[in-house]
Amino acid sequence: MRTPAQGAQEPQEAHGAGTAGTAGTAGNGAHETAILTIDLGALADNYRDLRERAAGAECAAVVKADAYGLGMAEAAPALWRAGCRTFFVATITEATDLRALLPDAAIYVLNGLLAGTAPLFRKNDLRPVLNSATEIREWAGYCDRVRAPLACAVHIDTGMNRLGLSASEVAEILAIPALWRTITLTLVMSHLACADDPGHAKNAAQRERFDAARARFPETPASLANSAGILLGHGYHYGLVRPGIALYGGHPQRQGEVPFRSVVHLMGRILQIRAATEGETVGYGATRTLTRPTRIGIVAAGYADGLFRALSAGDGEVGLTAYLGPYPVPILGRVSMDLIAVDVTDIPDAYTQRGAWVELLGPNVSAHAMALQAGTIDYEVLTSLGTRATRRYIGG
Ligand SMILES: *Cc1c(COP(=O)(O)O)cnc(C)c1O
Image (cartoon, rainbow, N blue to C red; front, side, top):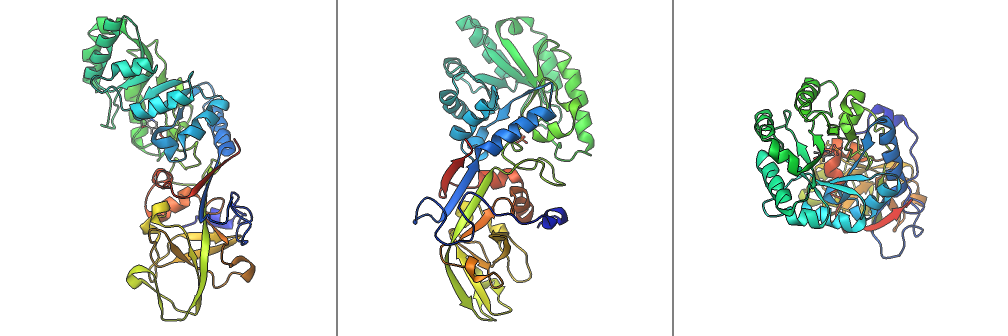
């Protein structure tokens, strides 16, 4: 699961739960069994890093899905303090929540305009990302009625076939100049389908289509790049970039080292250490038969805390590798809802105490490594972390 380069790096002590592996010193209270630490300093550093990489363009922030599961209420103000002024969310509800946090931010709603919601946009000073000719007509009609040229973005589809206007819809709607006089178009955008693979031919193809479409809106700032698009280089940056995952320490690309600081640290507590003999099995389904006398640490975190069941390790399989202090501890058997078992046979006694803390995500276990191991993407790791672990925000 770890790339050779990551494996070569010195294991580090995870922060966020006191001295990892030492009983009794971690957390805020004796009752805590899992702690999710979110480093707002690292988040701000990642924002500044991305802004630097896209120098010349405005760097916005995508904070949809509760800031990718990390908590919009904490993340968005931290990004504002780092200088971010433009934010993207998916839904109107997310947008009204964000408006309460950031009265002066520009807020775009990616899912666009739902019928009858224009007054809600106006009331909360939100900008719809208009995804079809129908939405543009509706917004223009509303602006006309209230005699206010309200701000909005137009999303042009350049090959993703998700949301956005097709090239023919763009032509159709441009043929109605009166529409454009009633609204204020502040952004023309599109979204890349394959930016996580820098060598993919679709990247350049989408950029060409975007150039052709946005030429019809020469006055309007343009935006094409998500996190992965920023890494594709200057030609993809235009006037505004829209990173999400990279802010939160995820890796926007499939290959290579994670170039951003890790923001999330998940620690789980050892509830008991048990000894089992060769030939016994561990966990649901008895999928793992022990091949030696084994000391097992039972850790208080499971799939309800975002440890996917795909991280299980039956016989002959490799699953999650957690860390106890500087020591890797492989998972044994299946992930259950609230618990996992890890092999601590070879770990010094000082670390294998009841109440010790195990690093499940952190400096030694990146969201990217966990995602690769579970057959998913960093985005799903972060948005699956759940609400049960005690949350601590540091570096704010
Ligand atoms: C989610 C999203 C982003 C952010 O993407 P990341 O890959 O997380 O950087 C940008 N633009 C649109 C349209 C999105 O839906």
